[in-house]
Each structure stands twice: as C-alpha cells, then as structure tokens.
Length: 565
Figure 1: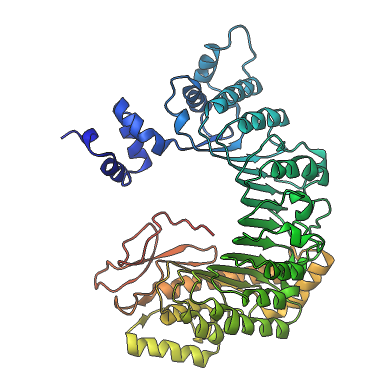
Figure 2: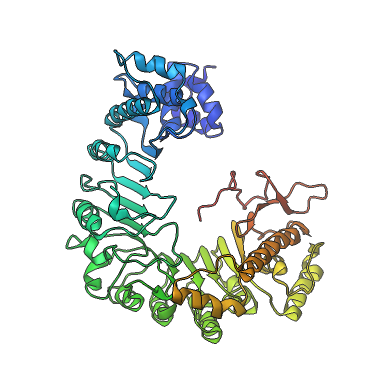
C-alpha cells in the first residue's frame, strides 16, 4: 500500500512521530515526499556564519535563491545569529570552488572576501522569502559589520508577509551605543509584533529616529517589547532611553501585550498611552525603580481607571507601590499567570506584612483562574514557602506551573506534615535533612500538600535576611559585592541547598494514588531537571534524573527538558 496515497491528515499525523533526522531522510526519497515534508522541516531556518561549515551554508543559500526552489515558499521564520566568519579554516577548497562558478576573474578569496560573497547570497536569498512572517536577528556591534545593517533591513522590510520582528543588539562588553551604528528600523511598517533588546542604554536619538517611526507606521501593532540593559542591570543607570509615552507617541496602538525592562514610564500622559485592550503586561525595573523615572503607583492606578483586566502579569521592582498593585489586582478576577520577582524591601517587617497580604488576599482572589504562579523574593520570610503559603496554594485548583522560593520553616509544622504523609498516604522518605524544617525538605513538603496535578514545580533557594542591609547599601551606591567572602558563601550555600533538594526528592516514593498530583518535572532553580516516572520494579512513582521518561496518564512530559520560563 503506497503511503503517499494516504489522506493528507493521516500522513501528517504519522510525520508528527518522526525526528528531524528521520524527516530529512524521508525528504530525500522522492519529489512527492519533498513537497509534503518541506513545510515541516524548513518553516524555521537559521543562519550563523561563525559556526560550522561555510560550504553547506553557501549551498543552502543557493538552493533557496533559485527560481525553482521549493524551500523558499515554505520558510515562515528566519533566525540570523552571526554574519561574521571567525576561523580561516572555515574557508575550504569546496567553498572557493562554488564561489568561482559565479564570480569570474581574480578575487582575493581570503576570509573577508568570502564573507562578503556569502552575504551577497544572503541578500539574494532574502528577496525570495516572500512568505516570511517572523525574523529574529541578533546583532553584535563589535563583531558584525555595520555595512550589512541597511541592506538586510531594507530587504526584510520589503517582504509582504513579514509581521513579527525580533532584534537583539548584544554586546559582550560595555559599549557606548551612541558611538555605534545600530540596526535601522524605520523602514519596517505594518508590523503586528515588535521585540527589541539592547545590552546597553538605548540612545534617545535612536529611539526617536528608528523605534518611534516603526510603531507609528504599524497601526495594527498588538505586541511590543523593549528591553533596555537586557543582560546587566546591576549598578546601571538609565540616562538616554526614551519613555514609553515618547515611543508610542500619538499613534497609541491597541496593544494586547506589553513588555518593558528599564524603560522610563513617567506620570505625564500615562492614561493616554496605555491600551484598554491590554491583556499581558511584563515590567522590570531596578529594585524600587532606583535610577529610573518609573511611576509604579500611577501605572496601577491607570490600569484600574481604564478598566484593564490582565490575564498575565509579571513584575520586578514595584516595592514602593505594592499597596497600589494589590488594590488593582483585587479590582477584578481572571488573572491566569502571576509572576513577581526579586522582592527586596528595605525592612523585613514591612516585607513580611506585604507577603501575608499576598497569600491571604491576592492569590485567593484569583484562585479559580491561576494556572501559573511564581513568587521569588530575595530573602527568607513570609513570601517563601511556609505555613501561610501552604494554606493558600491548595485553593488554586487550576494551577499547573508553580515557582517558589524556599527557606527554613517551623520544624514542628514540617514534622507534622511529613508524618501525616507517611501514615495516611504511605509516602516513603529516604533522604530527608535534619531538622525537618530545613529548606532542603521544602520540595517534599510541597509535594505532600498538592491538591491538583502540576506540570512543573520550580524551587529557588533564597538569601539570608541578615544580608538585606548590606545588599540595600550596594543598591543605593550602585556598587556590586563582587569578590566578597559573604557573596561566595551565599552562592555556595544556595548550590548546596539545590543539590540537597534534588536528593530529598529522589529519595521519595509513593503509590500511584498518593502521588497523582506530583509534578511531571521538578527543578531546583538552575540545577538539573527531575522527571517523574512510574515504571520501576515495584511500580511506585518516583523521580529520576536524565532523559524523558514515562509518566502516569494525566501528567504530561515536556519531551525535551526545556522550559519556557
């Protein structure tokens, strides 16, 4: 029975089970298979001259550039990572041979000459991608040639279906963006999504000349993200980046998604700037919005005034306007994703008071809709997992992803929780730390307390409250505690806790009924992933380290160990 005669829907379902390597093998079988597999294999392509064989990249570009190419119409997303050849040995004899076929006469086939010719092929290739919808381009000023900036953006902006532009300006060292040429943006128009990330302070002239015009020329823009100082925030002061009000200007696009990092947001004109259709908001400022003209209080008041009901909210730096944020959050229901990061107030008692309000009022207010919750303070206290959080989390019956900071908890409370799990649910613990209230045991405590199945649980060891005063002093002085013994000890302590959390979870074992709500994946901050398995000798679910494993029905495995956080 010829497989090619199967209905397209069935054949497509079969392809879903094949790896990329298998798809490429099938692609080489016949032209019929090529037509069916090309959209699946080549819908996303990437280009990086700094790695791998230049010869294969050149061949691929030539295959796209031909008039009979079946690949070019299939490409929907293009990623450009590097436009510079780093190693001389990347320029091989086959590269020179293929270049000589199209470039007659004598040319200096050194690394720079080959790079220029490859870029010419890239320019020709871009004109063929008439169905391209998304481009993701990373530009490094000290690495990539600025001469390619304008030609590439011109060709990209001419593509009729391009609606999503992602540009990252990434510098490995601290540079003055005012002295470097940055990607021109003003030729883009009619975008739906614009994401910009810069590793330094964006010059005001660039904001006015390049960013504001593309927003004004995109009346259907619904998603906008601007990340200033995207790779380093410590001790950096925003001096030149334009405010959101200045960037959006009079166009005022009806944004559904807005993400800002270290972008000024003054009080004036805020009501006229924010869209009443906003659904997803992510805002990052330094702690307490230090060194940044950002009106947190006015932001929350404006959202409440124009009746915005966010489904997704991610916040870092709103310490001085927590009451205003909470007043906004209790003004409506339906929040699905709530992420609050890096809480660092000046006083422990004030931070604990606000934390109690979070767990007693805010989270219960949205308990019926929350599917993702992340609460990550900098120091131990009420914000971390403990008796107060443990009372609230089981109320969130729709929760699927949970991220919490862990610290020491009351040992008698922890002992009672663990004893109840042993007696009632027959949970076995083989690697618990003493005392039972140690942060290393918090992962086990959370698992024993779950009333709904989680897809992922992330645990983050937090800092000591005694470090607060010193850290706040560094923030105020814009210095960093580099190389201090205290910093080294804190890092070592967190790493030890991460490893111990893993060991405690690896030593847990329970029946299928008792473990039905255990997360598919558990991660202690940036440590290894633990994945749930059910196929062992005694058929009692537990965790293991390593590749994807079988899980109980109803708990999905991510298949590749990757996280979208």
